[in-house]
Image 1 (spheres, rainbow, N blue to C red):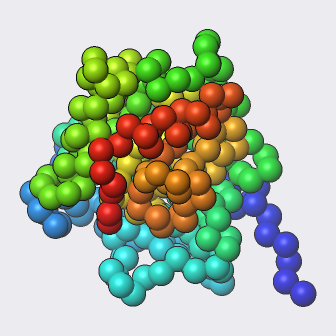
Image 2 (cartoon, rainbow, N blue to C red; image 1 turned 180 degrees about the horizontal axis):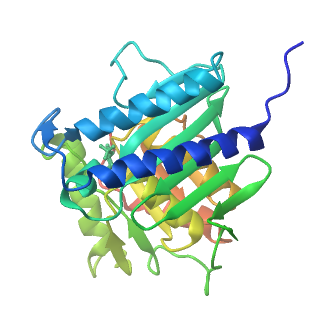
Length: 284
Ligand code: IPD
């Protein structure tokens, strides 16, 4: 019979690996050329590939029987997230931040079983923010348990500070849905939310929701490696991840459309109100 998985041991392994990856990332900041992927705002650097290689090698040496899915080695249409234990990795989430020396990029190291995120480590080496989460064991920022702060008042759409991203598609129906929805949420004759923030990294945004610094984060277009680690950090902090389109209460980790909401008694109403404010639907 196979051994039960020791999730805490996997978390410790990922923390050490994230620190090692962080040294590589900070040593290259301001020194790496970038190239375009899909278009001139979808960017990648040599350091993304170098960090993924480091992570993949360490994972293969320590957990040779487990699967690996990484942003840089992903082959569209071929790489699929399956039921086996899988490391789901974004070597640098927030590559555009990395290129611009805006200190909000991180290494996002997730671990899934049956496609469910069960361990997550997100490390921002510039600000030394180490977020960790393990199923059944809570989540932490450095040594502090999440959420760091509870709501002062019940969460409502109107009172919310919401993480958003423009994404790399800057035309077409998804872009229109985002821009029209941002407008409706912000406008005086719409929800008139408190504000929006863009940290430039899905993992950093989700962890900010887990910590209670953002009330929610809405995203369309990112991938499993952007969200897997943050997802378990969020859910262990009492928050919830639902889909980025109305009615998606139980999204898959590779759903590509997400709404992360902090722990709050008003979260269900907030989710319904957010979905009700969307102008159109996202389709990735
Ligand atoms: C991107 C960031 C960004 C999100 C994009 C992601 P990358 O990841 O997380 O915030 O809006 O969808 O692709 O390219 O920096 O690893």
